[in-house]
Amino acid sequence: MTTAGPDAVPVWRDTTGPGSLHAARRQALSRFVLWLGLALSGLLCLAWTGADPLRLFDADGLRNAGDILSGFRQPDLSAEFLQRVLDLSIESLLIGLLGTALAAGLGTLLAFFATRVPDLVDPPRPPPRAVRAALAASRSAARGLLGVCRAVPEIVWAYLFVQWLGLGPGAAVLAIGLTVGGNIGKLFAELAEAVDPRPVQALRAAGASRWALFLHAVLPQVGRQWTGYALFCLECNIRIGTILGVVGAGGLGSEIALSLRYFQYDKLATTLIAVLGFVVALEWLSNRLRRAPTRWTLGLGAVGTVWALMRLDIPWRDLFSGAQTALLPRLDTLAIDTAFLKLAAGQITDTLWMAWVATLLSALVAFVLAPLGAARLSVGSYLVDPPRPRGAGRWLRPVGALVSRVVLQFTRVMPELTLALVFVVWVGGGPLAGILAIAVHNIGVMGRLYADVLEEAEPGPPAALQSLGAGTLATFLFGVLPQVQARLAALTLYRFEVNVRATAMVGFVGAGGIGDALNTAISLFHLHDLGVLLLTMLLLVTAVDALGDRLRSRLLQGRVARLPLPACDPAAHLSNPNPPSRSLDP
Image 1 (cartoon, rainbow, N blue to C red):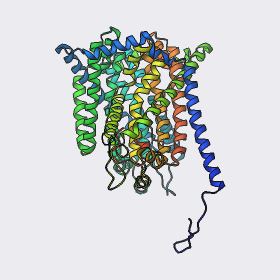
Image 2: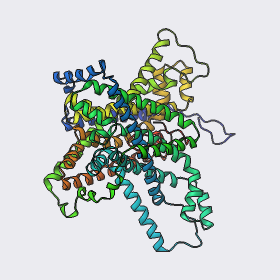
Image 3: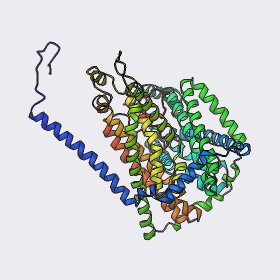
Image 4: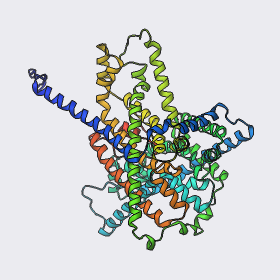
């Protein structure tokens, strides 16, 4: 029915004619072709990586998996080892705190230069051409530096700084500061450019300086968003600090690597349980801080930073000793080696195939678990006075919701690198271990993100279906999914971008991808190879990010989809285009 105005006579149009049926069939066919294409692409990419899923059920692999699980039956609970785990947990906490402080400082500084400040429509005295050119050059340089920082995974920076500063937490702090600083700086700049331009233009018309514009017009609009995002990064960085020890950068990761190297699975079980409890407690505290005033977050962050500076043994003077020049490839040695370029191209393609297969696997499982974990779909209702479930549904739905949330929580808190170490022992080195590690971790991440998006759906359509007697599955498929499918696709695409970086990280422990080549180049001081690989990685990440930004923008049809999100998945910006300032929970 259509009307031409408030008093017009309703005009009924037949929406069930042959044309409408033909359009519906064509849409259904397009949807089928899309799903078939995605499935075929996953199978082809899996075949191209050379990964054999049957190795999961190989006799040797199952025996290795049984050995790992045997440690959980009798974990090492000796007082001496528990004290060591506690000390390493505190060290991981302080690494994350200090790394976040460094990243926030670096990101804010670069964001100041990278932000395009709104100008007046018709300025009375436009700045000279030389000044405009200098501002444009500084903005491009700042954005380029942010891109370099965020393109190199934390573990690569950590490995380089271990060679530079030696073993210890300093390498992890600097690695987190650089990579996360690039993420924070780009996001801060994007948020600053999206503010209401009127206060900025009013101060500019009064002759305010660039610093005054930021202090009095930009920060009041984005300050809480910046603080909330930094808090989320703190949570992610502490989690990262627990795993960078596998390359000698301190924290719980060093104990995990030692336990696997010497087949001490009782100690490995104790350490993994500590990581799980540590991250769960951290998320609980983070959720409490998000509901508290911002000053509590800033105060605790300042106290933690001072504590970290006093507690962590970091040789800051060695940063200026000149030893870093030995780790940098010289320009005159960057000759083009055709054979090595072909090898690097093959490893880059393996990285892409691994990330794509892992993304599809995790998205498939998360798509099943997320509706079970969403409160309204699983145990609640969209109706004001819903009928009470009868029979087995009274306990099946709560049990299903509980199981889903436990699975999503457990898989989400286990870092990819830790899972990669376990799968390398289980199925051996190679792409299969990396695919499984990334997929298992992303089941929890994507399931949580999907559940949040499902909760944000408008209640009208699913409530109408439930009032007609529709079940949970029908309500999800026809009332909720059509509203959120674009955002689900955008989140999945974003996780693929994150997984490309994660694939480079798991390769450091022998789980395939370009990370294996980076590890070899750094270990053997093949600086020429290292320079080529880092440049290749930078180009890959830049290209994937640019393509992902464009596709997400089209999927979301003008929504805020270009926010640069870190590898620790705060993609709530994509699930909620206008999030509350303190609601950045992954």
